Image (cartoon, rainbow, N blue to C red):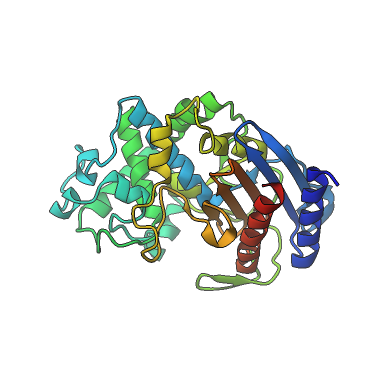
Amino acid sequence: MTVSSDLHSELGRYRLRMGVPAAIAAVTDADGVRAIEVVGARSRAQPQSVATIDDQWHIGSCGKSITALLYACLVEAGLAAWHTPVCDLFPDVGPIDAGWAGPTVDDLLRCRAGVAPNPSISEMRRLFNRADPIVDQRSEAAATVLRTAPKNPGRFRYSNLGYVIVGAAIDRLTGMAYEEAMQHWVWGPLGVTSAGLGPPPHVIGHRPRVQLGPLTAGRGRPAPVSEPADNPLLFNPAGRWHLTVSDWARVQRVFLQHVSPLLSRESIDHLLADPHSGRGRSMSMGWTSGKDLGATHAMQGSNTWWAATATMDREAQLTALLVINDGRTRVLTTSAKLAGRLLQTFR
């Protein structure tokens, strides 16, 4: 049995067991994709619409590691620096609470700066209807956060809003919108041509039938065209990217290569370092420990319509990528275990 048929069999069994519409997985080493397979349909309502390897898939908060990677590119280009106090990133914003002289951009990227997880519920509703430029929205969000003192800086608190602030800083550091900067510094140099924002055009996400707080359950219907099937535009730096899994693998190989065309080994080490590892919940810059999955690093993303996972064994120079167009909590949990098994299969 070839490694590709191993992968196809694993995905097929998972799809039947979990009842997901479609699943795609790839395993890549530092040189290229070793195997990639897809099973299932683009929509639960249209089983004849078969998902393909060339389709784009939503990776949710796995995009945080790519935002951090973009910031690292700016550091190497001399446009930014690590350890910069958050207050120094926004010379045009005021007033800024004195407490922001302590937390740094590293703390923002590791979710330890003292930023709330998300805007308030009422603000989230308002964000869906905003039509003003996204750079202005990010600037306003940053100004609102910085106006009051950080809450428990140094303590881990997973924060989408913290990555929005990093996006606002990138707007200022580059003189272009975060989205343009990503194209200029990351997508273009890596040859990524499929990246976009929001729901992908062909494969449809499926929201669970029931949601109780952070828990979601029940096989839901495809996302309707009549309502937003993603977070507001403000969340672009925190997790609204979609792309083909082949292109996602191009990005992941940067973290595996000893000599990357994009970043130095020193920068990659900095992105993956977690000074607080082993002391409760923590993360590096977009990644968490993958120890429980037999990996050195792992990450997951979901906007409740999708479940995306990456597991990386940096010592074996191998990464497994898995995306499913179903946002149930159980899918997110079990797909992490599947991604861990894929590393073991191909190691």
